[in-house]
Image (cartoon, rainbow, N blue to C red):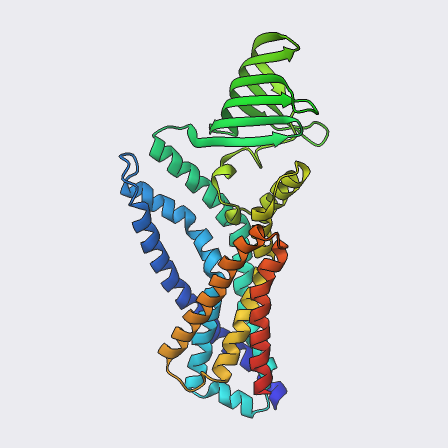
Length: 365
C-alpha cells in the first residue's frame, strides 16, 4: 500500500510545497524591490532619476533572489507542509506507513528544482546583472561614459604595482600609474598612461594591454631617463576578469568562475583572499543550506508546529531564518579577524541546520 502511495505522495507534496515557495518568493520580490527602490532614491544626484533607479533595481533583482533563496525555500516548505498538516494529509500519509524520512524525499524534489534555477541565476544571470547595474549607476551619477573610481584601484603583479583611476568602456582602463621595483623594493621605473585597452589573445597567443600616451621614467643610480611614446604594449598576466567593472562588484555578487580566478590571482601575489573565499564557499555550500532548512521545516510541521496556526509557523520560520542569517553574518567577519578557514565559517551554520533537522526527525521516528 505504501509503495503505491509513493508517486501520488511525491506529486502531491511536491506541488503544494512548490506552489507555496512561489508565493513566498513573489512576496519577497515585492518587498525587496520596494525597499531597494526607496534606498536608491536617497541618491539625490541630478542625473540619477527615478527611471534610472528603477532600471538599477531591476538589474540587481536576480542577485537578491539568489541571496534569499534559502529563506524562501524554508518558509515555502513550512507554509506548504503546514497547509497539508491543517487538512490532515500529512497524517494520512504517516498512518499509511510512510516514514518521516520518506516524506522528506517528497519535499526534496521541488527544493532541487528551485536549487537548479537558483544555480543558473547565481552563476549566469545575477553576476552579469550586477556588473551592468553598477556600471550603469556609476555612469548615471557621474554623467559620463567613463567611470571615475573614488579612491582608484590598486593592482599588484610580481614586482609591479599599478594604480588605476577609472574605467572606460569595452575593457578599457584610464589614468594608469605603474611602479616597478627590484628585490630590495627599490624603485626602478615609473610609467603613466592615459588609457589601456585589452586585446584578447587566443590559445597560442596571450592577451595584451595596449597603453596610450605613455610617459616612462627610469631610475639608474643618480640619473633619470624619461621617454614618451604614443603606444606601448604591456604583457601583464591580468585580464578583464580582474581589471574591469568587476572591481565595482562586491565579492559575494560574483560568479564561481570569477571568484576562482580572483582567489588564484590573490594567492599567487601573496594577498589575502579571505573575502573571496568566503563568497566562494557560500555559493558552493548553499544547496546544503537550502536542504538543511527544508529538513527543519519538515521536522517542525510533523512535530511541535503540527497543530498551530499559519501565523505561528511563519513567525517561527522568520525567527529561524534570521538566526541562520545572523550566524552567517557573524562568523564571516570572525573568520577573517581570527584567521579561521573560510569553508568552516560557512559550514558551521549549515551543520547546525542539519543537526537540528536530524534531531527533529529522529524524535518523530
